[in-house]
Amino acid sequence: MNLIDSHCHLDDAQFANDLEQVIQRAADAGVRAILTAGTNVASSRAAIALADKYAMVYAAVGIHPQDAQTCNDKTLNDIRALAQEKKVLAIGEIGLDFYWKENAPRAIQEKNFVAHLDLAAELDKPVVIHDRDAHDPVMEILRRRNGKPRGILHCFSGDLAMAREAIELGYFISFGGSVTFQNARGAQEIARALPLEKIAIETDAPYLAPHPERGKRNEPAHVARVAEKIAALKELTPAVVAEKTRANSISLFGFGARA
Ligand code: NI
Image 1 (cartoon, rainbow, N blue to C red):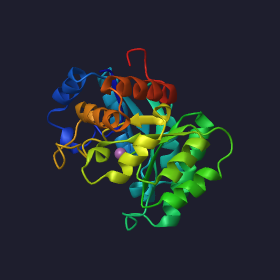
Image 2: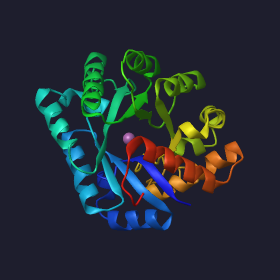
Image 3: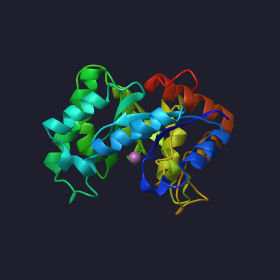
């Protein structure tokens, strides 16, 4: 299988001691490229440093909704500058998170999200969108965008109608480990119903390890479990799902010749 992990956080402290082996296990599992997403200026810088160090790693830069309080003219300019670096493929992760809204009030999150969407449009980069308990407000903001949006709704948690509307607007839908959980009937039905041409896969490592690793630290090698689950749901082979989702990620993000 040739896979792409379209979303994870390799700069997380949980990888501090064995990242070398984590990357090697991913390569051994057939992972050809990994997109590691920043969550604020410092973690975006760390993501770029990892992309510089490892050939298969690429970066997204941006300020996560939980860090929206740190978004101001200065930090947005930092993100703008970081986005010019060679292996930065996207602006992200950005979006709205009303589960953790005590970290940043709704108005501040919305301002941060829109500012990053504007930046992505200005730089002609795709966006990586996080949506937790904020489906309607996310869609309201995306509906209002002009031009040709390019991006992905990562770890998709909305319903089928939302997924279809997002695809209509120009976005890909990404599934992670949670689609493998035994109680994830909703996400599984959505994955079954959507065209494979619009699906990407990810780990969101170190979070959301797929079944049967649920609860442990996640890592990019486990993206194979997500491919297998989607293949089972769609009655396809894992190799076909791996190949198509990889091609989808390449068409959205670019990635280098090795991916
Ligand atoms: Ni993430």
